[in-house]
Length: 220
Image (cartoon, rainbow, N blue to C red; front, side, top):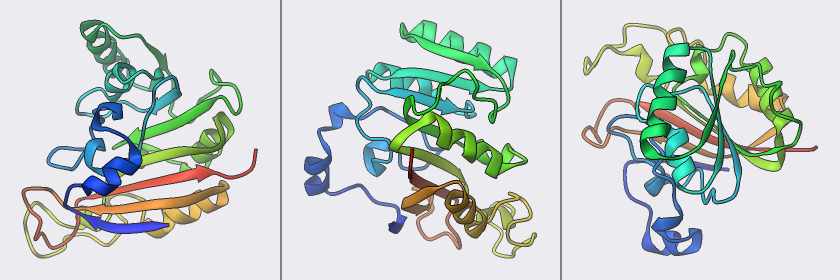
């Protein structure tokens, strides 16, 4: 497993090993946060079946993934976010299948049918993470990746740039790093990358602002 505090760009040597920048979808992981071109959590998605689990408050990643050649399904429990996603896809001239459902309701996807599941800034909105991860495990192909990006639970302890914590660790996000790792393990995932990301404009902040993980499906 890779565990890193990341504020910098990936090296040219690593870029060469992972493919050219043209192979990479312009995936958004948060405002002022390094994206896919730096972190390479998603990889080359050309011709792959990808599920976006919840539409984030920023750019529509489903559109970026479709533009990079993926066959994309997006699921969200908000009709407003679904409508905004459809408008973005139409404007970009790409095809994305949108499903209105709770994030754990993945009955529209057959077992072992997806190459990637991406969840940006929506995981902590789910009451039962284990239930969600069991469904994600079901729809992924063996060894396929689940990528999740969320507010770092330590960052949620603070208000803005104040140096004094206002909340206990894990209470604001309802999910600690340990909770997430254990949920992934219980759902038969192997964690292979964990980034603790600082905002690019605040590399000397007290705590990282974003947690990004990639885990791979074990078993069938």
